[in-house]
Image (cartoon, rainbow, N blue to C red; front, top):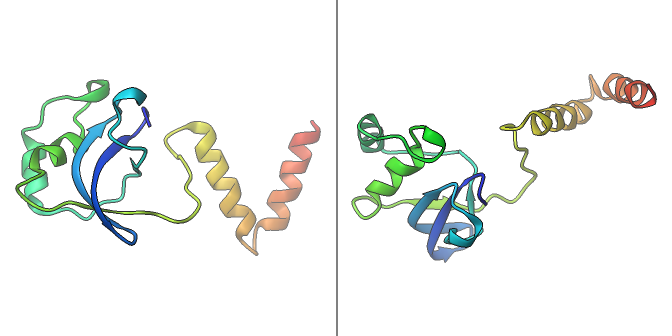
Length: 123
């Protein structure tokens, strides 16, 4: 969880969870849960206005998560639990994994990509 934003969950109804708080890249022992933020948002315009005045946070960067956390209590925030395969395109290896996985699912590319990968693995 230390590589992601993490939610402090409230009440859950199915896949929908109330967000009581957000922490950007917390140390594992300080994370409020194991529910990470994977970077897909539907935001109200007020969050962007808050972001304009947001100071630097984790990693010395301006963090959207910090702006959202400042707004908890002034407007509702909810998370949706994703049930599926997730790729971490924030790392080079994760980006390659996502590209290969999706290419292998495509009927027009699968055979050629598989043959290419097998050639590279034999080299």
